[in-house]
Image (tube, rainbow, N blue to C red; front, side, top):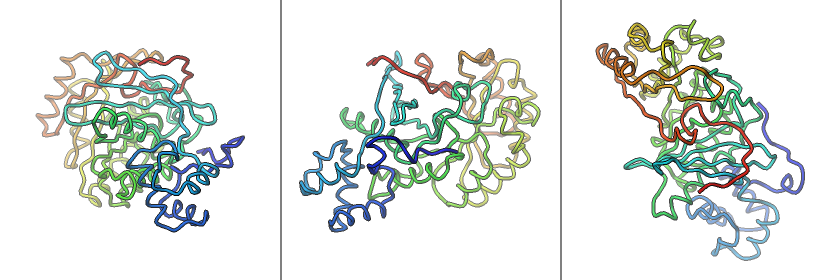
Length: 361
């Protein structure tokens, strides 16, 4: 995957602070002739006080603030369009990146949680036929800082409202495990107590089944959650819905899932988009129950969200509930999840790269 290592103009000569690991931030501060503890102060301003301008960093010497402004930058994402759902519980933002590409991110409000849905790539290379992101094509990977900055943007907004961000889900644009190095670097920044300090249990990575990524996450022995977009319990149907299944068929995928649970002791969430008359029959439910038998897991049922590019429709409510009853009868823990923000195209599979021209608040 391509990463934005080189951009034209002045931005190419400036260090993106949010791209740096903590030791790299220390090295930057030391290179400017400052003591190491100034890195801790800088990190606190960036991640805890949510500073977006060096002028806000009052306990740093003015000379250091000026030098940091000369050699580095904080913000690289520009919000171009913002829209709220009718119930005001979901907010979607279109961000412009330094090279002109765009991504979308979503803030969702629940009774006790405020969750941000993050993007990790511009577009997506997987090409699932029901996903708007896949139809928009793939442009490039995001850098760690571009991932982190999505979080900080919404964290500032919540802070101004007297609230705080509680959860992160890597379920936006892109396949996180195909941009694993940047994704994990971003997670380290977001869970580091010296930086953002969010508990790893409050973070979930979603994948369509990229097995090397599942193996890599298992090796981290992290508290970060794993969700897998499954959508079918046999290879023939799943290859239609998730093209990556041709590379990692269900036997291989489920083997990786078994190993993940054995290594981590953590439950896997399986996402299953119910598509009318395609994967929503009682026999499909029984097939799914058989596939997941004996595995520590939970199933989220999601009626397929509509997109302009796909003629398939989500299953009716009675069919969804019948599917749920069948799984429960087979002993599979299952929840019917109603996606937020469908009226603003902010649900699963609805995000896309596009050009925004207006600002809606």
